[in-house]
Image (tube, rainbow, N blue to C red; front, side):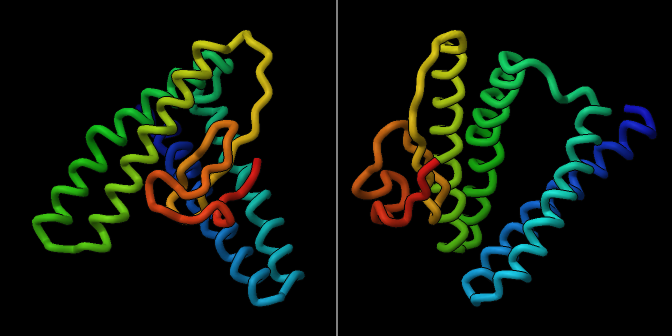
Length: 163
């Protein structure tokens, strides 16, 4: 990877982290009934997203939908099968129960993400409308049906965001 590509990769990673952090900050400000501060965090997160997207474009990461689905499927599958398994093993060795829960739930959710991508790859040309429900506790995504409880973490249906 060239120096320039390394710089773009560093920019993308930094901006992606900033977007996530600022969106979380916005939710906290909103919960504290500080709507203008929440709006400020949201606006700057949107700006950081522009920077990160530009870096992705320069890295050649952004492709057509079919290629993006394939890359996303492979990424989710690999994360679930290797990274989270390694993290989970270390958490067990250290006896960190909170980390064990986080890593095992995240691994299970990543597997469901991979399955959703695989399903989408099979129906790429099909006009299919659905509603997704995202658990705000663990990140589980349900396709078309709001579960009574999350199959990964057990959260009640009111903890799901409808998309």
